[in-house]
Image 1: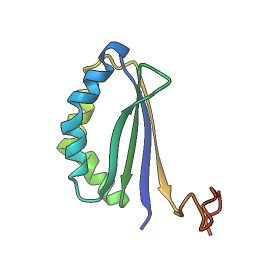
Image 2: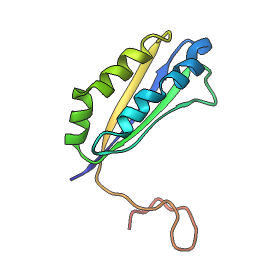
Image 3: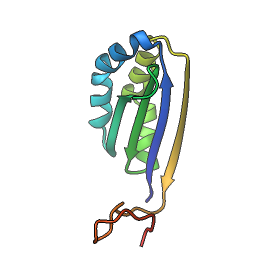
Length: 113
């Protein structure tokens, strides 16, 4: 069973971004409480005052499907749309390999072996 990672960039009215992040905590917490959710986070982009970066990690496609069918997802979707949404791009990735970034010698490596 492959993990699923989602990476998204959501652009909001810059004057409302901080409020969107603060008031989004209940939606983030609801997603984190769902079975199969490994990670779920929204963060302010340090280079773009409008952008929110989203990172999600799910145990399986089934866990992600349950999230999409549930109230946590619907609540997040409805919430984020009230803060001057100007654009969004999201991608999902099925993970076929996983390894530490640093090897035993403490060197960053691109290798998965």
